Every structure is written in structure tokens, then in C-alpha cells.
Amino acid sequence: MSHFSSLKSLLENNFECYFFESIDSTNSYLASTKYSTMPQICITREQTKGKGQHGRNWVSQKDGSIIFSMRKSFNEGMNLNGLSLIAGMAIIKSIEAECQLSGLKIKWPNDIYYGDKKLAGILMENTHYKSNQLVLVGVGINYQLVDTNEIDEPWVDLSRILNTLPNFQQLTAKIINNILFFLEDFQINGLSNLLSEWHHYDMLKGVRIKFRESNIELQGQIDGITHQGALKVLTKDGVKELYSSMHIEYI
Image (cartoon, rainbow, N blue to C red; front, side):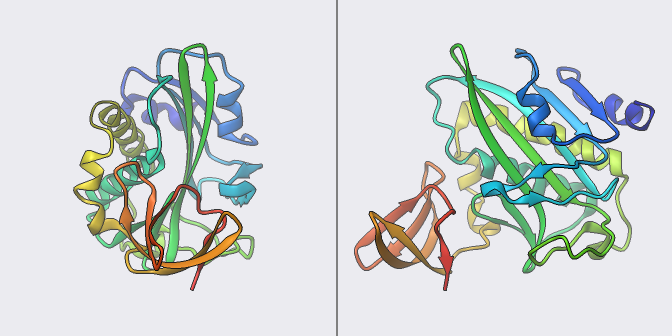
């Protein structure tokens, strides 16, 4: 806990916190933790069996990344489409403020890029408890990684972008507090605040893709997102809305 003592003092008081030197998965830990009406946060210096989107491995080096998961409850009937975009925007705004860095983009639905390289990823998992939807937001942000061949896509970390790295714990606290603030705003305003700025952070605007609909392959051009957070694609058959990136192929 001594490593995290200053971090805890920087977090909002209404978090139920769990800190680890090393853990298999922060998402898995919170998923097995007793339900709480308070937002719950699990933070670790190292994650040994982290998962990314669609079951991909989530590579972790001790203190090389900012790694945490947050669990928050929402009303049963609330539409949570686009929530990963809300978390992504909260992360970007935090890094912009703490690092005076511009040029970050969101690759729909859950990655943050600097140029053509991945800086951060978000994993969303939903469960239910009585009349609540419980949302797990898993976050991994590359801070200062040792060169590795374990990552199967182009990546970058903050140490390769910035001349001076921000304080690790201050940045972590800023991101966690900001995500909670953005999630609470989402409960009131939905995606309206995100949509007003989406064009500035949209990495995929104008990109052509192939995808399948009812076993038919279609092609189209990405044209932003809908008010429900779906990817909007212009095709010869009209506008299509995609809610998963699983079967998208970039042309």
C-alpha cells in the first residue's frame, strides 16, 4: 500500500479502493468483489493475465503502464452504448491537461492513438445485480515501456512522446477522477457532450471498411458516430450503424 499512499490521497473520497503490487486481472478482481453502491477501483503495478478487446492479451510491465479497473452501477433500463467512448474522452482530456499534449485520437470503439500508434486501450464488461447494470471499465495506458515483441500492433508510450514525463500517481489520479466525472455526466446528458467534440478526436473519419451484415459483405466509408455511439458507415445501400468492431476490415 505504501506505493499507493499518495495516490489514494489524490482520489475522490467516494471511491472504494483496492491496491495491488501484482494481480492477474483488475477486471476479474472487481467482477468477483461484493457489490457496492460506491464506485469501486482496483489499481495494480502489474497485471499478469490482462485481457483486451475480443479476448486479446493485454501486455503489462511493472510500472510501465497505468493499469486499473473501475466498476460503477447504472440503472437497469439505461442505454450504455458509447460508454467506452466516454471513458476514452476522459482519458484524453486528462492527458491533455496534465501533459500539455495535443493530437490524441479515439479509434472507435475503445482505443486511444497518437499518430498511427496505440497509446491506451479500454475494455468494457457489463453484468447485472438486482435492478442495476454494473459496468467494468478496464484501462491500460502506456507510460514508460521497455521495448518488447509481445505487443502485436504498433504502439507508443508517453515517454516516447513527451520530453518530460508527468508524475505517475498524479496522472493516474487525474484520469480516474475524470472518468468518474464523465460517467456521472453521461448518466445525465448521455453522449451529447462527447458528440459536440467528436469530430476533433475521431481517428476513423473518412476511412473505408469492409464488414458483414446478414452474411453479406458490404463496403463503405466511416462518417462519425450516431447519437447512440454506433459507428456510422455510408454505403451504396444507405447508412449502416455498427455496434461492434469484431468483423470490421480496413481497406
